[in-house]
Image (cartoon, rainbow, N blue to C red; front, side):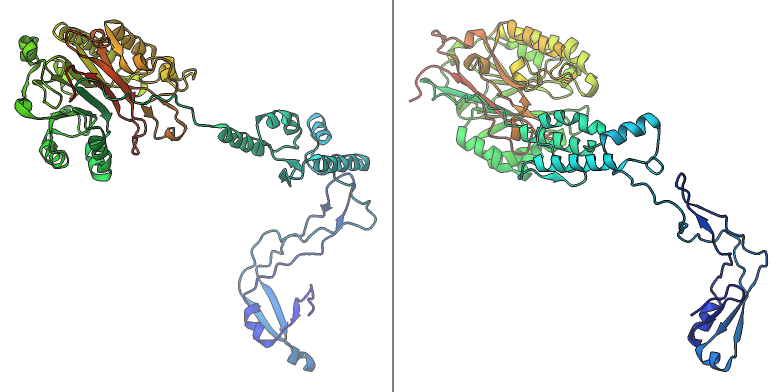
Length: 522
């Protein structure tokens, strides 16, 4: 096959004739190129396509070529006026060979490029430097251990820890270590270094010598979800520990949903009675329910308002001998103020010899929007309320109190964001400390003062439970008179512990407190 530049005569089979009529044939002159050793390859500018809008195409088939005949087709389509595609440049024979280009990423090359501003395309590099560089790369690869993975792009072993990363900082600046590779290596080393925080063992004590009273508090974070997806969690707690009171915070039910859920709980735990308080300000928010073990005359415990409750509160010494398993004498909801009580955050159970106050304390919220409300309103009214109850009987106060009191209650207490996070702000921790100083005792710290890494909350989003990186936000506080053995009443706090083995996909675990009510357990 040959192509004539003047007539564009092509010898092709007859079957290709019709296809060639649609082909656009740009017309251009031959290209002349020359090579300059001190510049890029240059080519003379191509000729423009002729202004003639049409191009005649003559086609000669192999059969017609024997007779010397031709068959012509007129290409009726206009040829676009544009620059033709340049062929690959051909250097002239008299040009000097191109200087050897040094491989990328060496220290001397990087400094030369930085200081002189030369590009790789026009900056010659001596052969001696190439030889020195090859020797350096060969020595680096040979010096690495056989079991170390080598980066094929830089011939440098991958980093294994932060110390290796520090030694390679100079190489990264010189371009021999990829910054992205180093960052991945550091991240991997941190993941390897991440380990489980060892928890101090805090086993539960044997039962007290007298009548046992066990209260368990658990932020369940949606009761409906817990009953539907993992009912065995509540069932195991009830069967294994048989608590006298099980308090569940953040059930997130509305008042209209209570009857149906109460029937479900009665089927699951027929010996228990439910006492509900729900949020009326927001749907799917807050809420506390107390399941109390009922038997005998106390089964019909009355529910009253806070005002009536405080007016009638009197010590009832004649009923001090009632055994564990009897329900509360009275059940009261809230603090007696509408702005608190509409969120359904508190239940008070009156027993013959003490009060049990169960709460879900307001969270300061994202951006600490409710911090002022909590410190100036809730904490002040709560302290007054507990002091009023304590003037009548000893008080046990527990639940999700949404504060990490001591430094050892926070796994990363030195982090900068701790002082600005809900539950760990200085204001919240100070207010909780003032409450304890006002004749209350942290029961868990009383029995385990030096316990480390004992938490009740772990971030689900960060997956911190597997590493035991959490906060202690759930408590049982008790009046100081309940800490030492009260010989007159035979009433004292026997034990307190954290059930951190029960976290079924949630963020909180239950906490427990045991009281000795006196008398005999036989």
